[in-house]
Structure formats: C-alpha cells, structure tokens
Length: 285
Image (cartoon, rainbow, N blue to C red; front, top):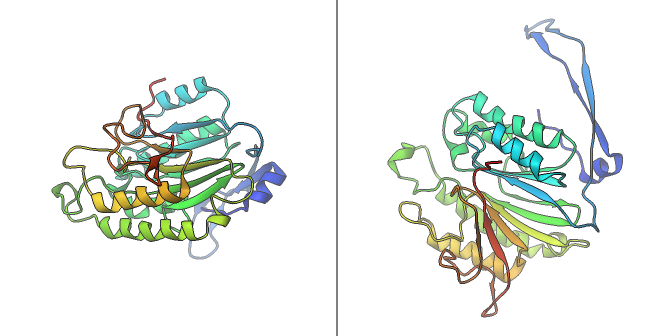
C-alpha cells in the first residue's frame, strides 16, 4: 500500500502511525480479518542549518547483512540513499523484499529514504510492477525531491545495453524512456525557482544508478547523444554539489578532466566548476 503524506506535516508531527489488519480469508462476501494492529514511529526531519550526513547503498544484489553492518558502522545519518540493484533481479517477490529488509534495519522507519531504480530491477516477472513496490512520483521512477536543505533529482537510465540486445529478449524499451527524461530535465530547469533555486536549498544532488557521465566500455557505451545532453543541461543550469551513482561495483571519485569523465561534467561557460561524481558499489563493511 502507498500512502502519501506532505513533508511539512511529517516534519511538524515528528512521528507517524501505521495501521495494519491481516486478512484471514478474502471472501467475496463477509471477508475475515484479524484485529487491527498499530505501530507508531518516531520521525527525524532533516534540518536547514546543520551539515547533512547521508549514507548511500547500491548494488547489494540480495545481500542484506553486509550493507546493514556497514551502514550501522558508519553511524547516525540524516537520510539514506538506495540507488538501484538492491535485489539481484525482479524475478520473485522475495528479492524485492530485500529493499525493505535493508531499509528497515538501517533506518528503523525514523529517517527519510531516497530511492532510485537500477537496471537489474527491470529484469524478471515483477519488473513491470516494480514501481508499485517502490517510491515514485505518480508512477514515474524519475523525479525531484526536497529533504531539509537538500534538493535532489532522481534519473533512471533503465537498462545498461541497447534495447535490442539479446539478453533482454525483446522486453526492453528504454530509448524512448530516456528521451522523456530529457524533457523532464528541461521542465525542472524551467521551474528552477521552485526547485534547486528555492529558498534554503544548500545542497543539490543528482542521483542515478547508472553513471551516465562516465566513459564505459562496450557494450555499455550507449546513448551518447542523450547522456551528453543530460550532462550539458545539468552542468550548465543546475550545477549540482555532487552526482551519485552505483552500477559499476567500485568506489571512485571522478573529477572534471578525469579519463572516465566522458562528457565534461560540470562544464559551464567554457570553464569547469569543481565537483565530483561519486560512483559507489557494493558495501563490504
């Protein structure tokens, strides 16, 4: 079930209550249920003044213990970023539940979570329903968010190879999906005063599972035209504090002019702004 609560209300209340009623028998007439259970959770808003501390998890591929142990060793955080491929694939509901196991252990339901879809999430029987099981903006897996003094934009690159690749068996149509996100980025820029230029925004994040600004070998070097346009729009207008990705199962900080900087990130007015592109893979504790 998905319940939408305005951020201002949740920040003000600093708590929320979940009600649950287990179904015994969903009969057409006179269905049977157990008694209603309820649980109240403390909620910790992200402040506007203090430095923000976040933790990023991606590419756990059904692994729960390691990422949870590493996150707890990292200490107290203001919010959690879950950046794709938390399940190894969407072929069964048990894999998808991995997302909730990690989220529950790390946050205890007390702090915000920012979620981005990964390419492995698009594989398997439940791939078409994945957005029903995870946070979206009215079903769209790309969106903007605001947490305290942090503004962010989630982008979804879809799969990591061309649509016609034999691995997908004709089940993928990501090119048009990416084209729609180009229009989405343009619309975000048009309403900049309500987005990344809004009052009290101190940090700007761009989060995507696939590091689309990075130079990647074949057969993963796809959508050069679209991805270069994304980087141009983002760097010339939004100038993010950082771009955060996963996917490649390694830890890198990629700065402008690095060999892996394929499209000239953060390039503005023929000069490069300081920035980093953080690619973080599987947590090891």
